[in-house]
Length: 545
RNA sequence: GCGCUCGUAGCUCAGUUGGAUAGAGCGUCUGACUACGAAUCAGAAGGUCGCAGGUUCGAGUCCUGCCGAGCGCGCCA
Image 1 (spheres, rainbow, N blue to C red):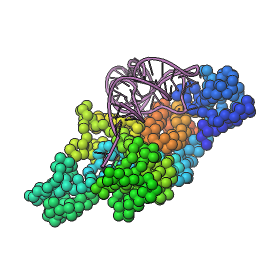
Image 2: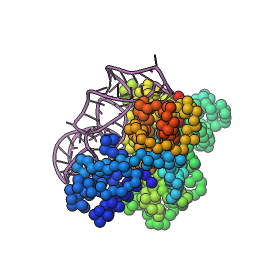
Image 3: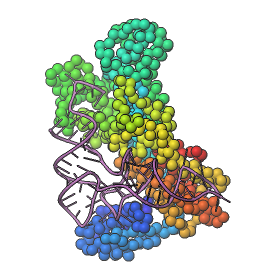
Image 4: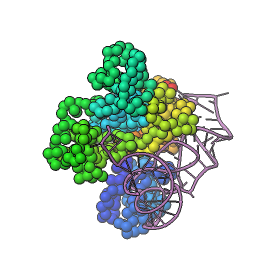
């Protein structure tokens, strides 16, 4: 149990004894100002109405009556805050416990129902671009953070290969393919075609591998084959990029399999039989407005084909049937209208309303030389995730993406990212790790072998560093609960700062054996937490830089 | 028009149930390497937290209105 939790419990106990009052919870927090103690509480102020007494008087009473073995000193300050300082013995005990936990520090035992996390889910109609990169970095780190917080996570990538996107890709490739072979492929709408250079590349590969075998302009069958080929190429390319960015998935789920298994048809029939679908103007509608959506949605179009809603509902029902307790979809903010309608459909199918959670990731705005770059896949004016990694490297790319909240729009200045990539904050954090590794090399000690620290007075810089280290489990738990990744980089930068400050003032390798042992313990703990934290972000923790 | 989200330093961003003097990085300026890595540290400058009200002992945080930006409101996904 953390100091926060223990102190909070002690305070409730003290208040129960002193006033006979049972408070629901006592809020304890780390003050911004080190002069305000290691922990502080505003309980006397926050509960002034309950106590019906002057907050300062309550604070004095509580501070005087508190019995908490790890607290050395409690002081009343300001209008009624109580500030607490830990005893050196308790701090050393915590440091020892941290070292003992090793790489499991900050992790909770896995329990509860597994969560299915779906992210990226880019359709295989081209390479991943920088916005997909943000989804990949956020999703993968979120999965790691959820796992650290004790949730079992299954990662899934869903892609549409049943609709007309693939057909459009096929036509785009077919036109180029025909050109290569001095022929012409007729298309209904030339302006709708994809134009990126990858289209021509796929066409070249098609010609190289299969020659003129599919050169049957206008043939639907040939187009289907070209679509298959193109889709496979794009998917392979996407998987390669994901692997490069250290983004993992347990399963790639394709839309087509839902048609093949009959799941789509089943869902539509079930909605009909449950009385939540009706025919109108030649189409079949889902009565989603009965379940909180703004309006009803079309499930089956007038021409008999399904809208995306049908397979999507089949997919999400499949998630539910597979026994997951929660499904979290990571989607682009331009899909904001999606959650209410898909949730409505699920409720209509008898799936609990809170089964599906959605995290919307905001747009990535690209800038080049101060000017915004309009991204268009069809026009081919986009920057790929691969190109970004080429420029700045995997670590910078991943760190940069998750450093800011996914709920906010991100301005990505390419020139700045490239120019400043050697001053990126990720190196600041990595440097702290490498610096510590260097100390241990010099000392001839294995960091992992340090399991305890001798007690003794500690300097303010050491205390500040240690308190920061002890805050890590709370950071992970909060990040998981709020499904945010960015608190982790923020924390790591603060931790790195605490270490650099400590390092500047105190020498680790000194003659006094007890002092050296304690500082090595502190350094080993810092190295451990930095490595764990960076790992949650998919970033390397280097021994040397 | 209706709905949702957002607005914090020149730039990119943090800010823990509402708490004490709103913090980092980059950029600018000034210092610090003859013992463990200067990819570092110390300091300075830089803010009406979009604007105006309200609730509260206390508001960047909660409520209302306004201004500005983005997204949604398809038989597209």
